[in-house]
Length: 225
Ligand SMILES: Nc1ncnc2c1ncn2[C@@H]1O[C@H](COP(=O)(O)OP(=O)(O)OP(=O)(O)O)[C@@H](O)[C@H]1O
Ligand SMILES: [Mg+2]
Image (tube, protein in one colour):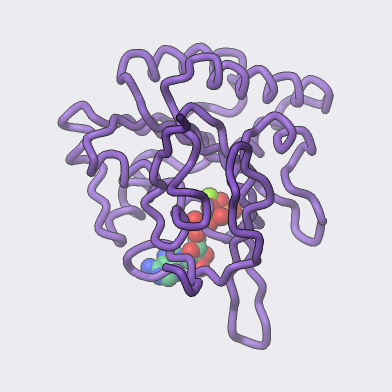
């Protein structure tokens, strides 16, 4: 039987048979400012509150900034880091060769049930050859899946104005699930949306759902909340 991992994002789990498939890798893709980092933090924090160890690898922001930003939503990562249930690790995007190794080591050491890598888009820094970037991403995702015990959310930035699902055009094929966030500014008012583009082994919601960011984090709006 498929075990489900609750994202903890109100309105999202009910759109995907209760949560992400345990042991799967989901891609959270979106344009800049669409809420990828906030949603990923919410996912890790929901696990911590259930006693599930979590590892967040940040390739963009510093762990200090992540902790500080999370506090405005009431998420106190430091508390769980002190308990040894959580690790927020900065990884230099120019040192990608050892990212896979560090990731596997941390997952094992922490017995992490949840993993976030934010963001995969910076993985092309210092690498000119797109095929090499794709290979690295492919290896990273297959490495996570091989472990089996951790359920991962990888963020990817969708370049503005493009009809792409990810930065490099390969992540979505290797990932088990693709969730797309959009942020559209219309005459002063902005509207956020979420769409589940694919989710293996899951009958998922097929609409474009309104999304909100409030002081409690991300919420997805639909009638069967
Ligand atoms: N307390 C809050 N209430 C409402 N909206 C907020 C709040 N804090 C942040 N936001 C919104 O969330 C956005 C940032 O979200 P987040 O950092 O998760 O986006 P991202 O997709 O990770 O972007 P980036 O491209 O910078 O990585 C802000 O631009 C702002 O619009
Ligand atoms: Mg971000």
